[in-house]
Image 1 (cartoon, rainbow, N blue to C red):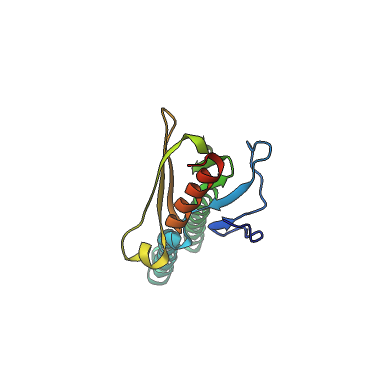
Image 2: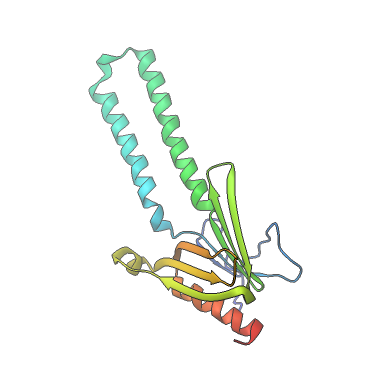
Length: 183
């Protein structure tokens, strides 16, 4: 696992050796990998938004005589605000659901809505098992899947859902554990 320079772009879903810091970062803790869901998994809500815009256009074209101009204006404003809110909330959900792998810990940050987030972290020596799973046409073609990290004792297990290169992520974590603890 060589550090071949920084590879971090704001909207990427697999950022190797990014130069980023996080809230609870410890001394001499370096971020090795930042993960988000693969962009292809976001197609669903993007297509839904296009469908909503298409329906709104059809309604404006076929039913303008049922409402006066003021009603049409306010219905369109309401629909556009709804569509933009839907897009914004789904984007925030994708952008802030992040997995962080450092040289000391694994951290899973799950963003639920605007006002609630759940952070799960474990030190590398608490990891019992790492499983990567991917199946189906799209997951195989676009090389994304899930990584499940089972921890020791009562600590919460960590899941990275729909991340790119799941087998590579599992291998990297195993290599980190091997380097740090000689397993």
